[in-house]
Every structure is written in structure tokens, then in C-alpha cells.
Length: 83
Image 1 (cartoon, rainbow, N blue to C red):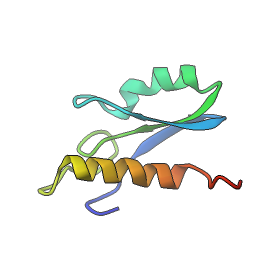
Image 2: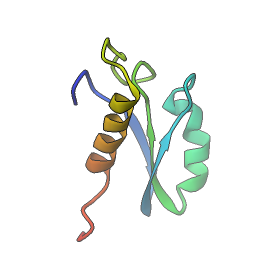
Image 3: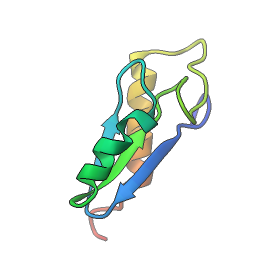
Image 4: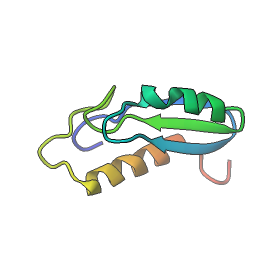
């Protein structure tokens, strides 16, 4: 991933669901919610850049970079539709 790794936590079993937290929170803040949803979904809670286990925001930080991060986690965490 350009600019560093993006960390995320995964819990549950079922259809994939991504949670992207707010500006001042890490993924750990959303783990109680993820646990509640985990009985029906495989929940991936993303640490946005500069938070938790993700790398720093860096000089090229933008909403475009945030979108790229979410899409990259989605691509890596979601099985292809034929599986």
C-alpha cells in the first residue's frame, strides 16, 4: 500500500462488512460494535492513517488516499464473488 500499511481487525463470520471510524478514533473504539455485528457478518474495522496500527498520514494525505485505503482493505479482505 503506498505510504505505509493500513491495519485492521477482523471478527465474525458471514457477509463482509467494513467499518471506517471517525476522525479521532482507532479501530479498537469500534470493536464492541464489531463484536455485536459479528454473529451475522465478517466485520473488518479499519485503522485510518495515523491511528492505531496504521502508518502515518504523510505529506500526501487526502480524501483520495483515504478512499484508496478503504478499497485496498476491501479487496484484500473480501473473497471473490465466486468463492
